[in-house]
Length: 410
Image (cartoon, rainbow, N blue to C red; front, top):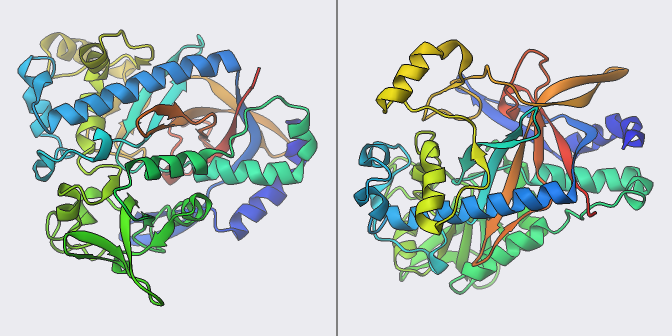
């Protein structure tokens, strides 16, 4: 791995040339910045990954069960496992999605689960991202470039090949396809993750479509061919937030939605990846209850634990929070991207290249779990790290960098 350090500058130069950047809107302005790559990969043993794989599969299966339940019978609420206030007050709960059963009853096709490893070696789930989790493209292209820069590194290291993500993504889109082509729907060039949209479309063989490229006719969705006959769309991997997806159903002033797409989806004539309304399951208030979902829907104890969490809704928890506030992580249930978060708890450091030497920095791991009838964990992931030695916040929107994640094959 150390031999990659000498290639760090060249790899980052190539990443910039290929447009591997991250854009953010701040103060009503769009800023695009490099997402710095560090060549010292995070290494996960085969045994450790097998453990994570079991736990992540279990968690995502339970979350899919919860979404199917909450938009239909709501048994988990009726049985008193989750108070209804946490469902219907959530910004992510969409009454427009009531009664819709997506193809194969899969709601979260691509789940981005964020974990940290404690200093005792235990892994903890920080949050579940079931709406539009991003980031898989970064370790994909980083691995490709590091293989080119130092092929001997990968010849002599027993790693699980991570180049199958695009195939896994295509399998997911094909599995739920209702008849037609696969499309990756992007809001356009100025979206924060536009590089990823175009990269994943190219690698998976899907069509990269702008909103104006799609239209509804006869309760079917079509891709507008500017030469030749228009094509019916069977799966839309949409990278547009729920509220902007269909101006006839959600935000009427949206200019990046596809009018009528929700009617086609409700009729079962197109699959939307991920399903609209998933935000109710990754709300930070609902996070508290995910281990209860595992028990309720699967009849199992949760393999992977939440970080120790207290909910002020409950009197005992509220008392504990007030008595120990200086030692706790405080999260706003509706914030994202590292905003509205105060970290005072501890997790492991990973070495990064810092000038001529190395320095420890806080890091997390976003694991990608894909559901297509079977649930599979990609044997890689996005390791993000803080470049600020005094910060626990690793998000790219907060100036963090990323590493490849190596899963050993034995």
